[in-house]
Image (cartoon, rainbow, N blue to C red; front, side, top):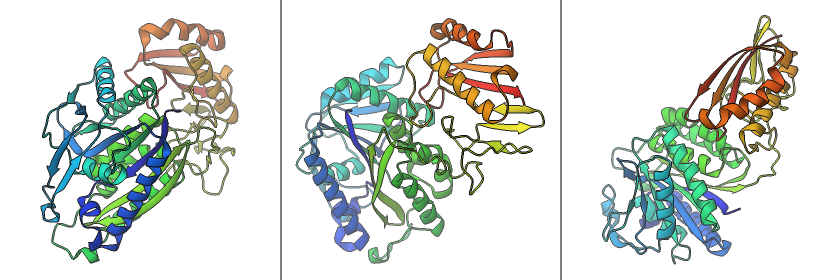
Length: 426
């Protein structure tokens, strides 16, 4: 597997230029350097960085200057001094990433000219993680206006580019957690997270990271951004989750967590663990499953929701189904496999898997495929997939004859081609 590990790191110049001024800053610097030593020993062949401090306005930019060299002075923390840098960049990967993004209809461009102002976050991360330029790097910008769908698309294309490039890659997201700065001058020794609420949210997010629940973090990113002023809406996590596969199959480790001028700065490590057994009771803490009950239990009394471990977990804070009177309403159900979250290849296999997931949920709720009344189908490629989907659908519902609506959509919440929205009798 080309992706060896992924890291979430802060990009504050304090950690690089003035670690002696605060014990927390010193701790982050030491942790940063320790991770850098581990990367140097890992055999990685590429470092791919996404920095929330490299802001682009029109599309996304990929750095392709093979040897960027300059002196940076941070525009906010200039009193800490200069950051001279000279990096080793892999231009071939940046060009490949840019080309694949354009082929997918995205706005993208490469950057290759002397003196281009590389951002503070990238400089801090590369100088601490890769001080000897042992591993060539590639850097992609953070579009200031890009929302979730565009950011996730950029991440998925990044993964395809990594797979095509075939080099062992370590992925780095340069982003703060909470991003509420102290607006007045402070004594660095007295630095702290700017509010107890921000600290509480940071620790909640870090707990999820520590359990390897990357997709769960991605799903709550908007709420985290709203409640704790997360760095650039925490969109770096959307990119990272999409690039790594939009699941929770990771071994996570929180390597450090400290305040930097009021913000929350963590160093998090994620290692892909495709065979990891997921703890479904912990997925989506904000979900509807009742406390103290197993996910195999039926939660269909009255109008209570149903979640079952026999189907793939929801990818948001919603149940598999909800019963109202004699009717059962299912959320959108896709083809991911239970436990592994594997997505079958091809529309026919995905259609069978999605209907099997629907069957399991219905039977858990005391219903069946024979009792399906209405189906809404979402296809991401109507022209390519409709005929094959229809053939498989007819095998299951040809005699049942529920009403049906089929809709073409640009994308679905995970990289799948079909999703079913079902209503059934109980």
